[in-house]
Image (spheres, rainbow, N blue to C red):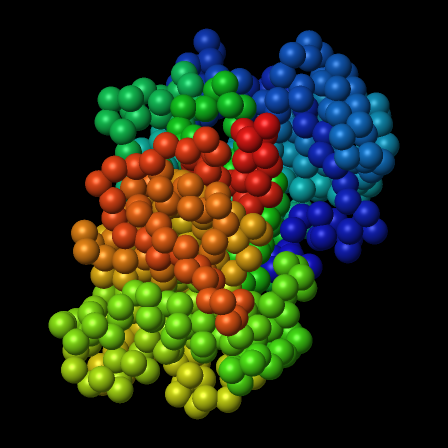
Length: 556
């Protein structure tokens, strides 16, 4: 189950099945453009964001046939909603609107009609006609709001103000019509606080659905010309996901989310150049929200007590506890023990005790997991009571901390886990731990300070390939002090190759008396040539399966 209400799930609850959109361009034009097509909103392309699957169709009948065939072939679709998409669906005389809509609706037994339009193109006669249509078919007006900040609307040459959008929503609701709002996230000079204000304004207006768009710079637009002269910041996949997830928490859970991100044809897009596929981005957002234990509306609604299942508890040889991971079909820790691995692999081979004898130590841990490595490091600093240990630890899965605290017996360990879960920070007399709850590759790009020691615990590295790629090792190299040391719980040859090529001297660590093993790596002045290829992740967004598949192809 998704942590937000998708439009598909919403339609299934309303219609008993999902309706697939059939986009049509009726060529009504736009009041914000000149007759020759120039002008308009700075972000909008000349074709008015016409759907790709109907781009070469000559007539509305051909557009419809192409869209229907596409949906039936690709999605095995059987029920449809007609979507008047490009330009402004109500920018015509009432006679023309009636003639066009009724003709289109007669061509196929659609179950709903979606009309894309602007807040300033909704005359009273149009509203009355749409309300009349709504008696025989579900009518939804998709309103281009884009922002509820007048300065932004003026900057993008929108042609109306925020009050116009809110008034349009009120008038449409007064006629009994549903309204979906389109909202752009990432407009120049807007901040996360302003994005939240726009979302809150729509929620307060009782909006019926929201389509989120991350700002795209498209060829041959005024925004493209502005971008070429004075480039402005755009959101990467990870940065946009962070913004989107936070905004979803302020949207009540009954409001469907029609779209998470913009979908612009590659040949038209100038920036941002994402390398995460549309479906992969949606999976990333959903998985990240699950890992963090957050969901749509959780900051504005009273949430029911959340029940969560504790994974199968396993007692290890040293008396520590671990979990069985059903996804990876393996234990989180070696059978010899989680505490033993922390002390004999990570602490011992990083020379942490010697470093703390000499002065304060900065430690970066990637893969907090159940917290054994960080806890043993903190415990050592407290026992020595000499210099301070500063730990920054990264993990995507926040909920694992809560599950671990339910099975770990050491009260101080549990205290640390609970502090990191609730406020992302734990402080003691001689140690502090800061928790970065994010995907490791993204979190690593946010760090600026150098570290004395890096712990890398990728769990099952063959299934967490993103943590043992050449590119990730190169980023870790930048975060390590010249005399620093990296200790990793991996012995894969492909990991050794990646470390060597990234500029590390790597030494394999194996304990003949246990299943504890890993690698100790220090900075090298030169890289090594290898016949075998390392794992590659050149854009830092590939999922583990993609990395493994790419590696297999390059190795053949």
